[in-house]
Image 1 (cartoon, rainbow, N blue to C red):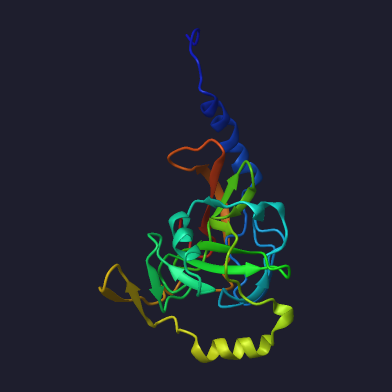
Image 2: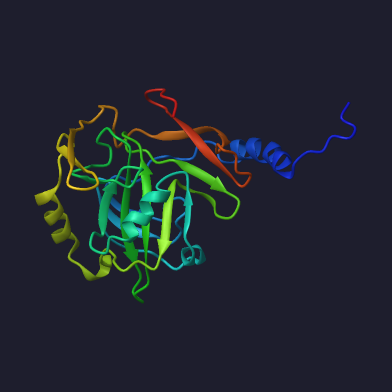
Length: 243
């Protein structure tokens, strides 16, 4: 019955990769440290930074070869264009269309891209945008070129960067952050094109919890299908919510 049929290489590769991704990358953690030192987050080897409520205060990009080229997977692809053209803000929040969010917080009940810039002592720097859902969970993807990594985007050659942690008063940075921090129930102003500003209030969903661990459960290919990547899906082990 199959005589004469030809199978596209992508179809054959998909048949191999999808179950392989599921078996190899099941149960990957979908949370980042909320506070304190973050080292080598998934797919970003050598990156280190200090954070408060997921927000980087200072840090170092590192010198892994992957940071010589731009890459994006899953989310924030168009956002990185906007953020890289922003030469002022070393940390900023956007929706996935690239609209800047004022007063947004990670885990505040809505999906967003958190963008920040890290550098190295030699002056090289790069822009990073990571996607978080409303409960402060990231997406994990797998790619043939870069292995598994946080869903988002990276672009080298940034003109800005957060300070190196070794060169600043970390306690002073924390105090400054605390004095101006947006509370999770704050109103967010969504800045639109032109002179129009739409103001929307977002409140925490009640499910965000730093101690809650989200785990990969199974995978399925990115749609439309790309033969070289797959998304690591997860469920919240405490609330049993499928993502």
